[in-house]
Amino acid sequence: MTPVSGATREVRNEQERDLAFLDSAYTVPDAEIANLHEHGWARLPGLLNAEVVAELRRRLADEPLRPLDALGKSYRKLGGNTAADTDSEPVKFLDHELDSKHNQNHEGMAWRNPFFRRVGTSRRVAGAAVQLMRRDRAVFIQDISFFKPGGGGSPTAMHQDYASWPFDRKGAITIWIALVDVSEDMGPLAYLEDSHREGPLGLAGKLDIRSTYPHLADAKVVAGRALKAGDAQVHWDLTVHGAGPNATDVVREAYLTRFTGAT
Ligand SMILES: O=C(O)CCC(=O)C(=O)O
Image (tube, rainbow, N blue to C red; front, side):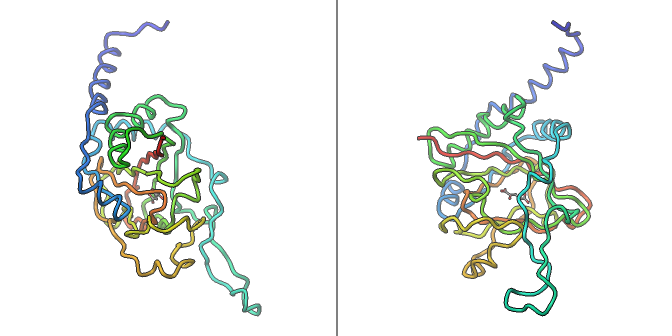
């Protein structure tokens, strides 16, 4: 057994005290629960405190980034002809490999690292999830980060999560937690209101799903407002969501946890 010095023990005790916040309850306002069920999204201001946010950022910095070849090919159309127009340039698509400003992710930390598991399954975070889902129990699926680079980080195209993480039933939620103060020009997460009432719309990649389903062009874009570090937003697996570009020089850091229903 490795001996632990008094100073080391003191630092550990300090960290434990900071993380004890994770054992505190977060009471989700009824209006936010109702908004999730009626309109597909909710706000959780102050879900995490500064100490937990700082520890998440510190630990994420030690985690490997998800490799590019783990990402689905993406299909934002860059230009070229249409299928009917064979004389002009062939159609070209932008994929993650060609987009130096794409979102960067760390994935599945809680499956291998007890610190992230503690956050994801904490009373604070998982307790909020069950209130939001109006369930007694929920199953923690995974955690993932979304870091949007500064200096023109690419937008996140409007999409549903369901196609990327399909289950035998709908009804999973994502809790998207800001790890830095996010201004409106950094690409905070936005939603198409009421879009959770759509069925599964399929994989969108980098293509805005509204271009495949033109009726969604009329849907109201909601949220997408400034957030403080530790504030969170929530959406269903069928809620269409995306984010604008990051026009600032600061990386837009977000940490996400997903939960699905348990019978
Ligand atoms: O943070 C982003 O830009 C995208 C996040 C996302 O797609 C999600 O929350 O499922």
